[in-house]
Amino acid sequence: MSTYKAPDPVAVLRDFVARVAPYDPEPQAEPVGTVEVRSAGDAGTIPLTPHLARALAEALAGYRDRADRGTCASCGGRRLDENLHCLDCGRLHGVLGQVIAHQAEQVRLRYPTGPADAATGSADGPL
Ligand SMILES: [Zn+2]
Image (cartoon, rainbow, N blue to C red; front, side):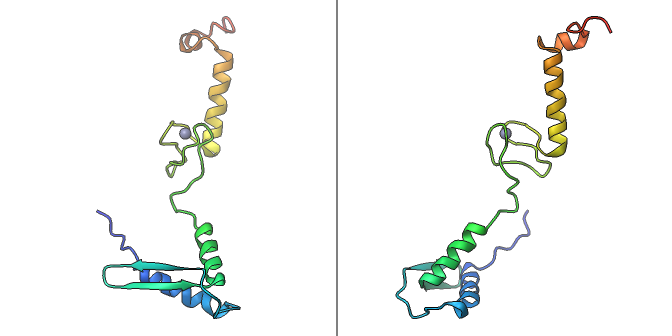
């Protein structure tokens, strides 16, 4: 059971506007849009001046999810766990993943016919 308590989105947006509005060079400019947000106990409609719209766009574009660990180099998937293990294709990323992938490639090149070849070492003959 999660103990995470989601913030009130209305309060979050109002706080954002309060932090950005003092720097708006044209606070009386015609709004380019509005944002309507509702929560369990509150609701708000906030007109967006060009400055506020830009600030909101930059804030959203700059957001990076805590679970975002990049993209899998093999399948392009975005679900890498905390060990940089791709949950879609199984590839392991990071330094350890590179070492394992390199070793696997070396084994593949050395024993091109597969595991049976690797088990007997027949690609190189007797050791
Ligand atoms: Zn993958």
